[in-house]
Image 1 (tube, rainbow, N blue to C red):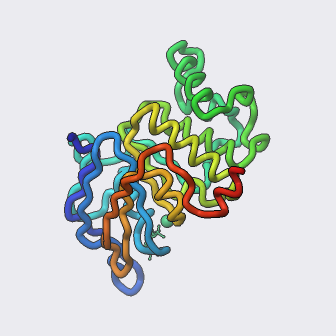
Image 2 (tube, helix red, strand yellow; image 1 turned 120 degrees about the horizontal axis):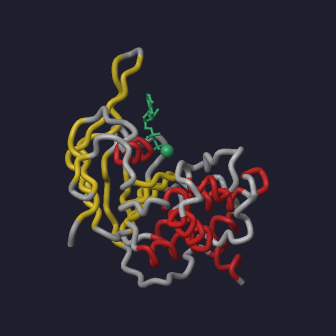
Length: 237
Ligand code: ADP
Ligand code: MG
């Protein structure tokens, strides 16, 4: 199978006043086309750093990162990025946030934005501003925006971490639905083991000092999956 993401011997250090801090150490990881991978690991082990390297937001590293057989050398429409906080423009409506710098007067853009609004279940909120939306709705706008240009890969950095458990479980289902319908390759960083087991086909477990991959655990449970923890089952009843 074709691999969408190929990480080879990636190392990364940050320079500070006392010299440099080694954050990632010779990471290798290959993610197949259409795969859903989650990355877990303790705080500070380098998960966000790794995601930013894949996104092309930081080019100061050793090794190679390829997305769709192209070496990463800056941000690109091939890669959608979703942060923990939604980072929507407060002065733009839902539809304009999703359209970003494309014009809604273009019928193709209009159609794409309408399809995305339906996909993330925000019909009726096209003209709402971020302050009128809940945290979960705002994060759905951010997901739609990241999907606008049909990226090869979606990179999500603890996207639901700031939300309550109920909203989180709804958004996990929404993301699963998007993955099933679009077959977008997903790399999601999370603190939540339940979330990994619910969503992904492989869990990459990272370790700190410096960041390495400790284990890659396949999750061979067919979809749709049941929630693993009791609290989730209670929510659903
Ligand atoms: P995680 O997302 O796994 O919690 P991060 O990737 O954010 O971890 O950070 C990994 C390590 O790199 C931490 O020790 C953090 O302090 C350090 N770090 C992250 N960003 C910077 C930066 N811009 N400058 C210096 N050190 C940084
Ligand atoms: Mg982080």
